[in-house]
Each structure stands twice: as C-alpha cells, then as structure tokens.
Length: 442
Image (cartoon, rainbow, N blue to C red; front, side, top):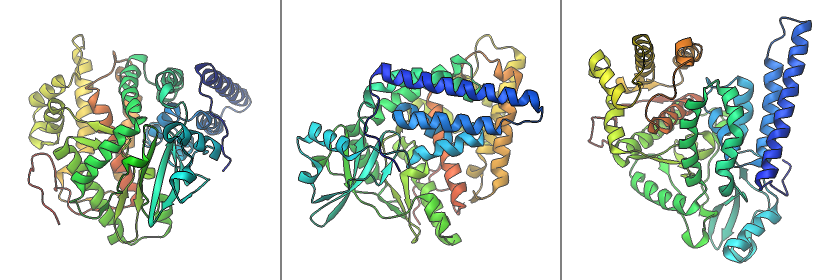
C-alpha cells in the first residue's frame, strides 16, 4: 500500500480537500442524472460506488476524525448503501500508512530520540493503519511490542473536521440538522478523548485488569515509559483479524468460544464497570484458533452515567415492555418525547421504539442465541429501512433520547454485527446481565 509522506494539517488545507471532494461528488451526480435521462432504469449503484471511492480516498488522505466517522458508519450496514459501508470498512485497519520519516519525527518530538534508539528493532513499514494512528512492530530484549503512533495534526483538527464532514453526513444519513448536531457533539467529545493516548493508557490498564478474570480473553501489558500523549506501546499479541480468521474456516466450537468471550466482556463492562470499550469493530480484536480473543484498543471508551444506566437498561425487563404506561414513563425519562409532540407523533415513536427494543433485546430474553442467523439481522435492517422512510419520523423535531444512548446503542449493534460476522452462537446469554448481579464464571 502506498505510504503518505505528508498529511494536510491546516484548516485551509483540509477544507480545500473537502471542497475538491465535494466537486467530484457533484460531478458524479451529474453523470448519474445524464445516464438516467437516456435510460430510466439506470440504478444508483454506479453513483454510490464512485462517490464511495472518491470520499474514501479523500478521507484516507486526511485521516483523523473524518475518516473515523466513516469507519463508524461502516459498522452499521443498514445506515449506508453497501458501496459506502464496504469501502469505509477499510478504515478499520488498512488505511494508507504514514511514511517512516514522519514516524521518526513524532518520536523525536515526544522522546527526543528515534525509534531505533528506544528499541532494538522497529519495523519501518506500518503493520496496520487506521483512522487515528498506525501500528509498528518493535522488539527490545526478549519482548515484542506493538507501538501505536498517532497521525500528526489529528488531535488539533477534530472540531474543524467534524464541521466539514457534516454536509456529507447529512446527505448520506438523510438526517435533519438538529438530529445530527446532538450526534456530532457526542462524537466530538469521544474523538477528543481518543486522541489522548495518556488517557487511553490509563483506561486500557484499568479495564484489562478488571476483565482479566473473564474466560478466553487476552490483554496486552502497557508500557508507560515507552508511551506518551501521541505514542502508545504495549505487548504484541498474536492472532488474526476477523476476515483472515474466517478464511481459515474455524470450527463451530472455536467460534462459539470466542462469541461467548465477547459477550461476557461487554456485559461485564456495561453492568459492572459502568464503562465500556465502545468501538467494537473487527480491527480492534485478534482472533485465535484456540478459541481465545485478544483486545488491542481502548481508545474509545464510553463512561455510563448511573442515572442513565438505571433507566436505559430497564428496557431489558419484559414487564416494562408489556406495560405501555411504564414504557412511556421510561421514554419520558430519557427525553424521548418533546413537549409539543402530537398524540400521533407520540404513538408512532412509542410503537417504533418498542418494536426496535423487542428485536434488539431478543438475545437478552433467551438462555442462548445464534448470532449467525442472518434472518434476525434482516429483521433489524427492515425495521431500520421502515423508520428511515417514515414521514412522521423524518419530519421529527430534533433528536430523540439521551445523548448517552448513541455510543451504548452503537456498542451493542457493533457487538451483534461482530458476532454475526464471526458466525457465532452465545451459549449463555444470561451471564452478567442487568438484574443478575452475581458473576458466574464457566
């Protein structure tokens, strides 16, 4: 993969790149409409493919927050046309890497030394490259390390990048501005945290230590003396990324073992730690043939406020779902309704949300669950399409619900999608759930 020797870091440079990309997208639409005039049956497939290519190429050159948003969107297959989700998925671990001289420059800035001085060996080429940073392999003595280096200018461009990406997001997501603003504010706060590797080091150590008791999970050790605000050093973990792992045709028991480990990992964080690894995309995990899972990135962690937790997870209670009055009370507590909503609007939102919770909550109401069932996900996508095409919902006044739900919902949907790609069943979904405070280990 071709390396980058420079990243646009100034607001003017980055804005110019967005403007150029916008012009390309506009040109693609002109071509589409021209072909549509000639052939009324011409589909948007070519348009989506060309736009996805142009937007991804631009974002991958800019890196940072804009590329991170694309990566996040790729996790939800119901949110974007397939051409976009397939292309944006590349941002998870195969974005164009930085050239070695820029890596050396970062080390000189934070350690006043080159990588070759700090380590016995250091790979000049990145092993993986994502939206915020890239990973190199290094050794020192008998230890092998993964060294994550943040791209220059990423931390300083979070706010300005999100303002620039907003028009694209509005178009792609078909949201109104008020909805997107709430989403962007929460995303901005998380991205600012994600660029702080000192914070990631702290959270990585805290969560990995707390979850070390869980079965079939591997966590690296972190090295503060070889880390800084923009560089993070940890043990090198062996394993394959999900796509490579699935190409080996792992047996059912191995996939199910990892599926259970993933389930326990997330349930324990949410219900016991009240903070959760909120970026469950395949690039953040390493899968092994012995049925174990490596967790390699705690950059995005959502701290769950106690008051939000107490209300939100009551929706897992079947008694609440079967009682319209109690259900509506919880929706009010989560700011789901607006004071000037009509009865028709309230009825529509209540009905849609209940149906959504009934579908997404199905794994929590069973002793075990087969996440390889594509029909289950087809139902989720069908409801999502119905919601996006509902005129009352589309014309709604602003965002609905607590901002804290954004990353919690994203986390669970990301987990479900990961388990589906793994073709895994979770043998015991009752472990570590809401209302079950006893930790039962296998």
